[in-house]
Image 1: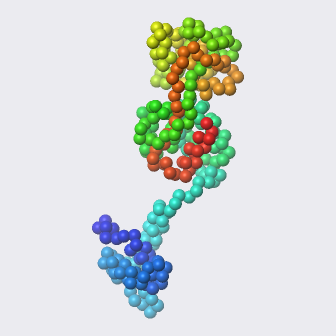
Image 2: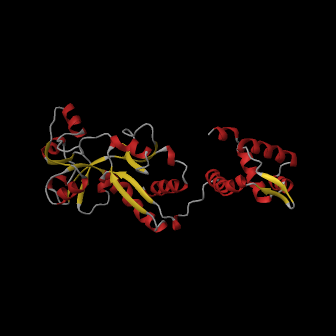
Image 3: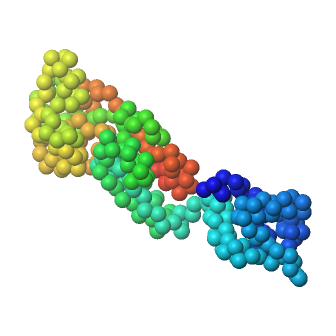
Length: 297
């Protein structure tokens, strides 16, 4: 380590060229240095390594045994350094072999990943996509440690130390099966509260949400008879029963099996965001993936 403190990159580059040329003049020409500058570098290198490194010979200079030992490790080190500081190679999706790791809820899967999937498969057929469970408390750590490339969460609940890009604004609608007698038109508040309803409780077992808080401010109470942890099961329940639910509009947009009406109670919407860590912000492959998702939603 002490020797490293006495070196700078120019000395190592000069040594590499001297070991290639065995001639101070030719090394200086290739480095675009003056001959005295290369001679000064060589003197410093001899001091650092406590070895002559290059000795006069009949056809230029010949390396010492120590210099021969240094030749290949030095070449490899300089090549690695060159790769590290070179501009990132352009990302070619057609040739890419990445495995993307994305944290999402079933809502994020349906509203964000599903619309983007066809484009990803077409443009980057050699890549793979792994969707992992989205746990808000873990997002920042997972992103920092490289366990996920992206996460999808509400803007309001996003960790402050992650990069983010808002994707879209979401609103709630009232949905039930096609032909539901209570959804032929927009129900009144009383009719709404009398309908048997299902709620999504991500933490499990909850029977109250923002809808109930707003109704309570008016002294009203609705009939929540089923609590489920995922939207996928909720849709199946709605399609096969007379239960209704307040759902994010994107989950039921274009559905032919569900009837969608405006609810008589207005809920605050939210913004969905794409989150990632600073470590991957400038990576060309990561930038491409983010842009594909933005375009898809």
